Length: 104
Length: 104
Image (cartoon, rainbow over all chains, first blue to last red; front, side, top):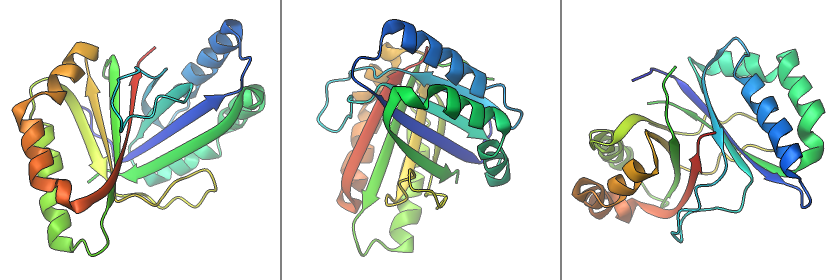
């Protein structure tokens, strides 16, 4: 078990025509976000294509970052390496959807 | 760091009129899901209300479950305790949205 106070989850819908090479670069970028100092744990990957009505399989990558608390997530949002990730990769996505929740 | 191969995330939109007592019961139910044997780690909680356009704050609870692999998540889905959770609490929600992804 790991303790975390704040879960930040992002779903990225990639543009049509995104190549396997683009995806490989994007994955490197995602992995780099895990190096930002307040990130406790990072997970990311493509939809598992579980076949249930309530499951959204339409996105390209899910990303889950665990933080100790809200302040650490706020700090991550303004970290220069987070900005660099967006600058380097935002041309690949057409939509992002974020869910932030506080762990009970 | 924890290793996981499969991230199962659920967002629950609760019905209007859900009381604080209902929520307390629901949280007990969510916590119980973490006892199911193939669950490595569980997190859940209400939206952090982070004020950004890309953040959805309209749901009642987010739930993140980490599994070793796809087979363990499949096993969780058919565990009787998972069914009991749904039977006991589904009257509280009006919508669930699930995202399952395979960790790269």
